[in-house]
Image 1 (cartoon, one colour):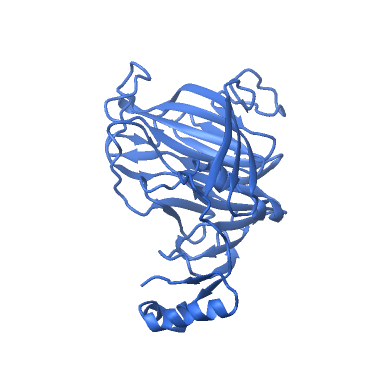
Image 2 (cartoon, rainbow, N blue to C red):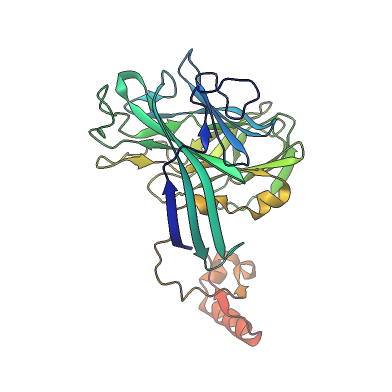
Length: 341
């Protein structure tokens, strides 16, 4: 729960590089004509548009080390396949600087400093998708923005299409196959244990966020941010023997709004040493400001939890709940929790 203290968006393109102005090997942000780097001094996003088939990939690098290998990017709607046949028509760079406070959490006062690049891409028939990439000192993230309904006035070579239901994302993350991993089988309650394996050695199946990998002496945590109910949450799907983890939506058919753009949640890669990954607030930093104006009622405290005293039946028992309230009061605890059921 956050309260935004201030936002500053600077339109100067001082943070994303790769516009063809410098192709010397070894120069940060160098480009091959269809490759760009988005960085804010930490892990960098390397975006590449394949001139052969018009597909887009995104890698995450930290210096000379590749943490996430070139991974597929794209989205498919009822109106368009925006995974290939794409061409870049515009790129806008800006800096995102924010300060906000939280009622609870790892840090109460947060400072955000990110580089953002928005890549406007057109597919067959003029269908448009914007790939928005952000980079911070503790990771990178990207999302898709689709224009709404009858177009957005962004060009005269199509109506900005791509509207209709979102069928799937082509988003994925490719890790080195031998990277140690801590993964939890996906379940709707996110209560499965985390098991040790490797990126390629994990069994075929669906895995929940967050998913943790170790690449060399650095760690990579996969997650998502800004899931607000207008677009389904996701998980990652894996096939044994591969280091690739594909994003799968909870609902395969999502109606895109007709009166405005649709922005998907952020696909998020937190990267660095274990302390950086543990202390990161990147998922919060990518979220919009809290809509809770009055936070005075939010007071953390110790809670008595009755779930293991009878599971669902205990939650429906007034006598059990009264007993736990009395127990909490006797120990000076602030709360008693009534769980699911």
